[in-house]
Image 1 (cartoon, rainbow, N blue to C red):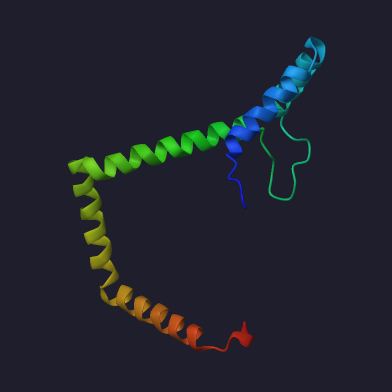
Image 2 (image 1 turned 45 degrees about the vertical axis):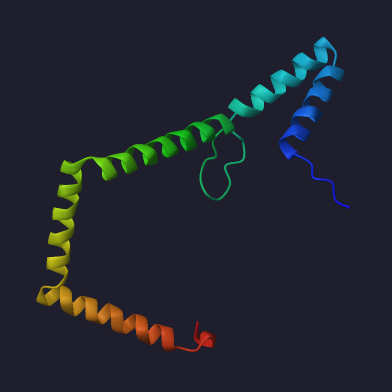
Length: 123
């Protein structure tokens, strides 16, 4: 028999139990350490460039989510913007089918077909 456990409720319960078991000084020390962990930039930058603090990372993620929500709303509801985007797309497709664009497109499609026909051992 398997008993379902709400992971969020379990985390909250464990967190509360830990905090309740700490004295005032130990609780302050734990909170200071947690805050420091959130705002301090890691010392090891790693091979992919400088790392950022967890707070900076959370802020950047929130900004990205908000920006995506805003631009999606604009692209779905702003008729003037939709019209401009359609105009640019029509122009881009027309250029793609002009002689030089058409030749490049045929070459790219041909290369993709040939690439797809190669045995996997050739990769």
